[in-house]
Image (cartoon, rainbow, N blue to C red; front, top):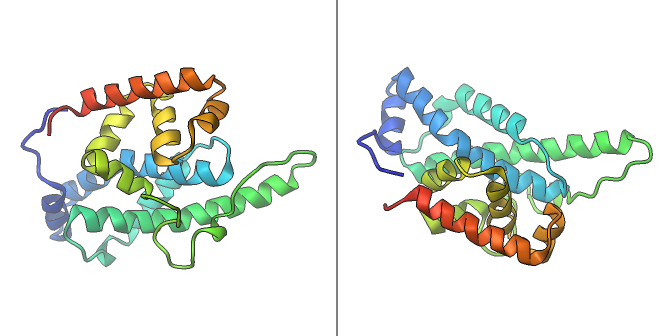
Length: 203
């Protein structure tokens, strides 16, 4: 992904806080792919089923738009942390609603891990051993660049990276989730990582 002379996230934040509506819209649009992958890594992990995270992302962006004046940070790290906090609280509500709905469905059981087990009141991210999903992205490159690159990959590449790198699942479980053999999933994952690196390109 070639770098351009577009404003940095920090510059967009500064201009948006000064009242530039165009920069504010661009700032939010830049984060949509990022929030989508963070939402998928959180909600799908908790529910143990594949869900559409788009509603969760949309709700998060609407609330962030509404409360933008409350954001007093200035850096990309602070901005993404603020968005993740909003998303995590919405995700907890989403999972609770899903749990209640699933209980009403006669004769159907849905396995899930309640976020209350890992998300303390007010905590910005679910507690888990090892790096958080956002840290996993940051270790590869800047979070927004990786999320943008991920969104350009085929769906099966996206899924194997989400399961393996963001949810940190063992290959055996990734294979079960995707309905493939472990060797096939490992090969798919290696191809997906190579493709992701190609799309990201040099820093």
